[in-house]
Length: 357
Picture (cartoon, rainbow, N blue to C red):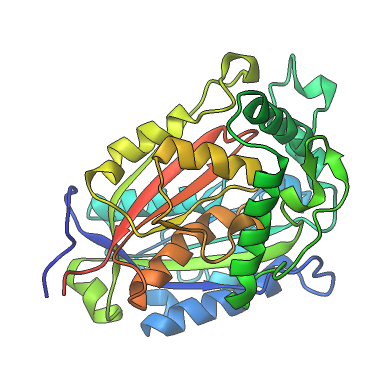
């Protein structure tokens, strides 16, 4: 068996296992620890590793969703922090936790890593919580919520002639139809477009609000092959950020996604699969343009974030879904994208490849 097709880093690192919860509108009966533990057990069981055999653990979550400081320490109990483990946390989507874990393995300080993330959005109003991401001096005091800002982006696309409302509805319908085969999706099948949330975005153009968890295991080199029949090698990964001020940006484009893709080697060869973290239908238009994706690429075959968008986990799920398609031979080269912040503010791009036959 040969290695990944286009290795560009000191160590070959692969996603060797992926697990996620069923994504639900509410999980009132479960604490965050109770949400996380079954997924951690599932992902470790897929590799045969025990928690004590993991070299590094990194998680992603948000104290704003939990409503208390250092909330991640509660779920760390689900991992088992005694005897002492090498551990870290990011106040970001789990895709950025994966990036930190990948760097840790590249340094040689670990050969394996457990990455998990979770979000329990049901107790509060996500639209209000996400305003805390905005510039605190000029924008946050106005309280524009996440849907209003996404609507500004969608209207900019329509004004530029790059899409229209029927095309956005078609993206939403395709995503929920594809989610029909995803047992973890929150929305699947025919979903009415509904009324305007903020014109031009209707309910169907917006992501569902829900609770969920995702986890992956990373491993390096020959160990990855021992743990997984067909590892999903991370042959490129990079993340970039747009200007913080929305007024400084062209909302119809995502140059940071394009730059991250260039540094990840995305443009070096075609991909057959793209898992894009596009919480709003209009944002798929922006990302397709930034990455130059044609009709031959399967975009969000899992249903994407329009079918399930657990905060802080949806980006890691994109990497996990892309990796899972490589694991089962449904993809040879895939791109996964994660975003954070208003109107695709921060963007991470990972290229994953299977071993050559």
